[in-house]
Image (cartoon, rainbow, N blue to C red; front, side, top):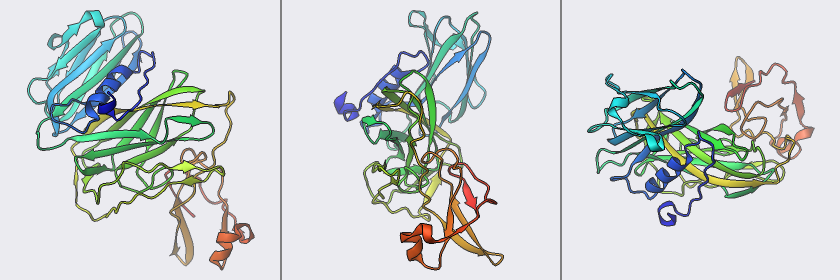
Length: 381
């Protein structure tokens, strides 16, 4: 396992909806870089459902995968009604599945190569009590000469001490090419058993070092207490939005951002040239899931405190509009790169030296007409 995963650490909670063991073992088989004959995890989810209610969801199967595709469903108490629908409307039910009642598992193996497109599944809890269902979708590459889209996740450290935030990174690539403009979500199993979601960005702001370099980044600081946390990373590309772009040169997956004792974010720049005019192609709609490993946190206070300052504004621009100066920038968050700040302090001076060395000596501008926007939005003043 150490050779296959590069020494990655895994942690699985005993929560029934975590699906952690399947995620971890899937990660060990796909982290070596080989893709021929290797099953990639397209989807992994776990949900509670009340009696006589449905679990409905979607997974995208792109043209690079589809070989030996399987849907695996587990349940807590009693076998549910399971329906899987292909893009052309074919329906698979319990009758098409290998059901192993002893371990409460049903497996659907799609014959041949799964048709590319949107696959939908619906699971009906016909039992009289609440149940937890998990769904995992695995598939292999269809062409040994074309590497499929894969996702790799990392954190900046294995052990953390509050109030330092964790930096989370996910790299999406297709062979030696990077995948940009995908949607990346991290599901974090916290020390108290609860779950939270974190959206990663590739916009060059906050924890992210460079826009559109295929590395998606974000800070996590919402710790529930001391203990061990685990990550699941989900990547999704919708047809026409996510793009495969040529990488300028081979580099390390990421350079860790960090927050110093003053609360200032430092995001070291990667040695990578990103050319906006570089050739790129749109991807099919795709889904990928992987584990991001685990980390431990200590010194978390029992009562929540506001210890994180807003991130720095790094893309301020000025233009003349209707004979007035117009400023625009990407809004930071109240806590690093998340939330909405409570106010801005805007000052003006005839000299750059005053703004740089004696900011408080510059003339202040009343910003009351500024409408505060959430982190990642464009502010215009």
